Image (cartoon, rainbow, N blue to C red; front, side, top):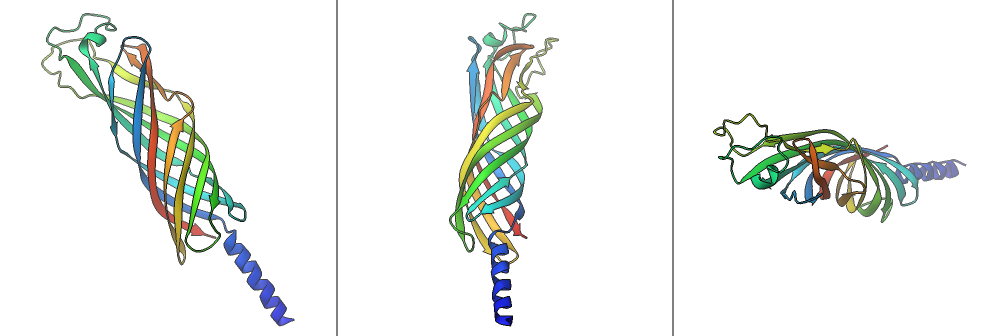
Length: 230
């Protein structure tokens, strides 16, 4: 009787460990690939800048090697754009000063809270294991800040050289990727790489309050962190 009880208890403990929920935190980098599509002749050049991201992780087991993973993420995406003064002059409400540089550089930073909802499939339920995942990513864009990088202190102009993104409040996207989990006693090391892409436009671009095109970013993202099973 005691032996049967101990075997049953051991089985339950094993089952709990195999299907335990997981909580954790990850930090990572976003490597964007910005794409600008002009509405007309308002062409500009974008540059890709790496940025920081941090995510909380909550995993809900579905049984076996399947689980649902929520990853609320704070992220920043930054790009610089170069636009010709001749193009900018087409949208300016007044004449631009004659001594304006031939092109102007702006830095744009979009800050977001993201909520990926991922179906995760692991190669096992214990030990070192790999996994793949995919799912929707709902992004809430909190702010879009633009800074003029070109030195214009000598222009002596009252015309604001205004080129900036108008970020959409919510953006539908998707994540797909793969990772590895390495158990180390009370916690596990996790690392993954993923491709994140928008399904709707992230932002329009405006010059002097007039729309000139759309701005989007397809990202490669790399994360590493800790997971706790309970």
